[in-house]
Length: 119
Image (cartoon, rainbow, N blue to C red; front, side, top):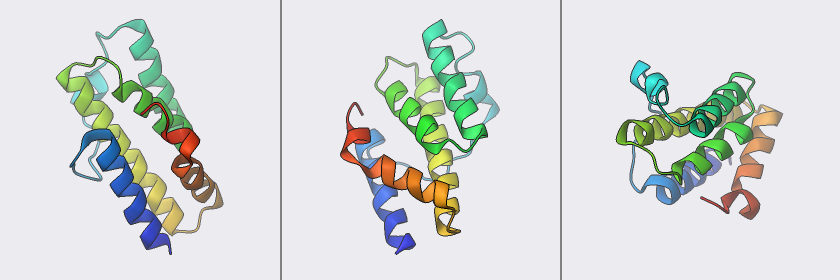
């Protein structure tokens, strides 16, 4: 059951956000620096996503990054957002596979139509 959820969620993320893409990308130092010269609003959103994932707030991190994906971003920023989404998704799905109730709830929330809007 968890395996099926993993496949469905990964497909949704890849298909709806970026088309075909690699899953499980790691954040790099270039990703961390991609928003150094961004607008204050983009910097704030990037930091919000980083803070959310530091506290295992998968929904907060992923929804914030999805919103950022719709903004006018530079190529390095697009790559940073893509890598962050992939990394956070992989982290959440590992927690789901371990049976973490908070991750399972986050997964269900992220699958709901309400969180699909605004992608």
